[in-house]
Amino acid sequence: MASPEAPLAGPEPLVDVHAHFFFEGCGRPEWKQLNDARFRGGDRIGITIHVASILGSWGRWSPTYFASPADTTLGNDAMRAVAAHSSDRVRWYVAVNPNDAEHALAEIDRCVDAGAIGVKLAAARRADDPLLDPIAERAAEGGLPVLHHIWQHRRRHWPSQDASDAVDLVRLASRHPTVSFILAHIGGGGDYRHTFAAVREVPNIYLDLSGSGVDRGMLDAAYATVGARRLLWGADITLCTGLAKLWALEVMGLTSDEMAEVRWRNALRIFPAGSLAVHRESAGALTAHENRESERLETHRLRGDGPRDRSIPDSRFPISGK
Amino acid sequence: MIDTHAYIGPYPFRHLPHPDPGVLVTVLEREGLEGAWVGHLPSAFYRDPAPGNDELFALLAPHADRLRPVPAVRPDWPSWEQSLAAVVHREVPAVRAYPSQWGLSPDDPSMRALCGACGEADVALLLTARFEDLRQRHWLDSAPDLSAAAVRSVARGNTRTRIVVVAAGRGLIEEVHWGLTPAEREHVFWDISWLWGPPEDELALLFRTMGGERFVYGTGWPLRLAQTPRANLALLPDDVRGSALADPGSWTGVRGR
Image 1 (cartoon, each protein chain N blue to C red):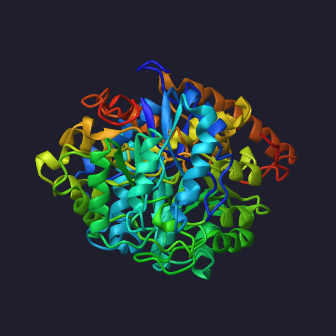
Image 2 (image 1 turned 180 degrees about the vertical axis):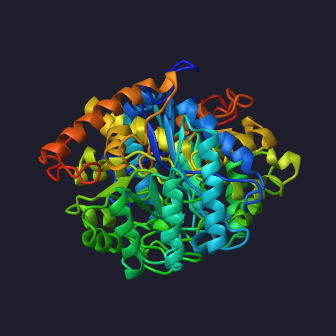
Image 3 (image 1 turned 45 degrees about the vertical axis):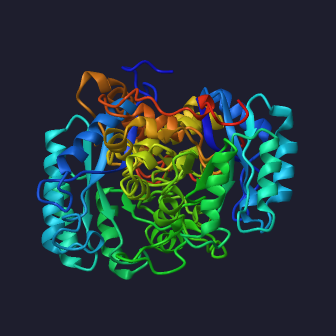
């Protein structure tokens, strides 16, 4: 059992690629308590970087998954403020609604200039809709990963969202092979095995392990399908299940090298170079790792023999047994 | 500490890796748990659970020091009283009932009769709120989650039988707890397998409002990762970290101790 001070998930760097924050005036009156709790839980687990988004006003003035342009901007500005206030441990996605196409592109440009390192798409439009193509093109230009909300095997309409499933995302990812897509929360509802079957041969889709679902067999099947190099650790809104999954991955027998891929190294590959660097002593491990990794990727890029700088990894993934 | 929420056997709607008692014993050791109350998962979907109970007793017999059988008794079935007597005779700590899977209405009087009989026999009554998240149900899995009304119906007027409800979420728990008298609440316990930690901090909130002693440790193995409740307790805020849970393994008055 770890001591109270030691990170519950161990001392190695840990990047949560699927986090959320809240702000004063949003649809969650206990917003500060929620933010504090994420930091408290994150510190306890040992999260080095939270890569987070805010979805509009969280339902206060427009629906969470169908945020108005004004709310989209409001949420992104709030997210920017959280990241600025906690720059040692928070990075952010610019969240956009593809239905307001011009606004979405302008918002991406504005927020990337302000420090956003990825694009968050929720459920305002299906992932395979042509309206998402300009957004994906912008992501390609900027070397930004796209985190896409997913319902695993959507078999019917679910209220309050136009949810996409893996098959929808595969269509988008196939049209934009230089963009890294993060398929959100395999534990977030639906049939994850359908997702695994859909993404197996699509190397620019990464699986984020977040979500409240903790089914036995889920992690094993994800690992068997795409290997450790296409798994990303995340927690979404249940840090407890995130910690449980880290412990379970260790029990599954992942090597320390594979654990590092899932915990931080894959994130380092798909986010813009240097964007996950941190500037505090306690996270020095990630800074050092990132510097080495950035140098390695840059060398590959200059030699022209490696993956396209930070987006597409080698497609020959180890699909080893446990 | 024991795991009050464990099963053996396959699940009809998805593959479960190694749902075997020997593996469960290994998992308990890894998680630092002394033992488990174990149900027979497929029995929840049998019309008559009796054959599943026989299988449960047989499979757990080699592990009697760690795994205690919790068979199912269906109170709307003919001669259920004899079924209950038969399993009580085998010194079980509790019996399970699945009113949603059996199509019983929330106020079915047979459930209250079973609850009363459990008290007479000094065994606990264990109810399951759900097996899977509603968002991922198989299309043939049409039984609804156990409702708060169903739990209240069983718990109201009961001042003797310990009722343990597993896999309940915050809403169900609060709706039942605050819908009972203080005397009735004293006999209802909740496992922590389906309550969330930070940032929502549901578990911490319930510990503050209801007290840790109303909760028991449960994993939902082999359906769910056994590490989850341990992670949840480890992430509790300082003011409730270390709260003592109820330990059914030390309950007196439950037959078999």
